[in-house]
Image (cartoon, rainbow, N blue to C red; front, side, top):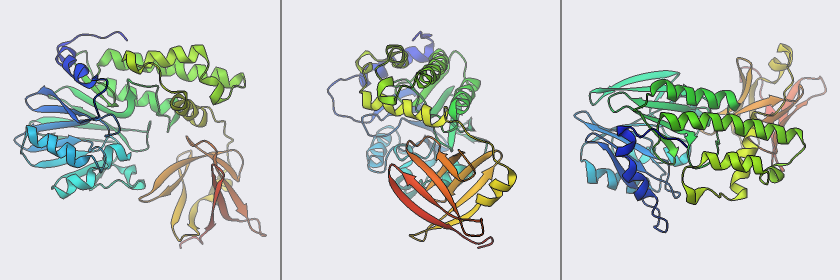
Length: 378
């Protein structure tokens, strides 16, 4: 990957050296960006990268690592500053980024997340919709919502420090594992980050190493090549297990990765981002009439008493469950739907003797769960 060695990237070279200690056990490592900004590198199962703004207003964090590693993160923070932690902004609600929310909330922090985080187990206090701005420590913090890796992704930009946090919409240690909204969402996330960035901007991925504008643009080009090659292999009838042996795809995979020692990732790992493309971007759908859509929308009760909602959002169909999940349904017929991003997962709606939708069966890797449709207004 070609890099522009701006003042920002030269400043960060020590970070690459520290994080590359080959045999060291995983530990949280701070990277000093400036006197008022740090990045804490997670990795090794500890959780995603964390940003920290320090100033007269206190401390603002971007992400909170896992629940079990949040106390260690707090210890590292306290080695730098004893100021109160006022905010945590989540880039998305995956547990390795939001699991520490409850810990920092107990310390007095207000947790900010995107609105769709309500369909996840992540704790949050204030939810934003499409965009927000927050003035903190003398600079404006901008947030932009995209759907790429998750339905609640936020791209975060600190104007004073000129640093962007992408969450898991960008990684420079592996191929893309976004695609909750297909290629369209992946490109939207990259473009949102690039919209904040210039040649001096430090770009912090959810996992991996601090990068720059050129690195993110290169990543966008690799994503297009990755998707196109997987689509071509699908046309040839290749399975995901066979795709991991394809030399052209392997060459694209290596171009995603910036560290030589990480250039050979296990086939089982590479198969996951391949299947995400296949089950999101490359699933054909059939159009449904408004009558067919109206027939399936509503509330459904599972056998354990929990309730989920099938609802429309524009042209999309979702099943949502507060505090649990949000999944998109891809129509294969009026009553059969695949679940976007999930392999071997689908929903079959069932009709009663009168022809009305009475419930559905959810199948996920061979296990089935049944739900009955509740009367309107229930």
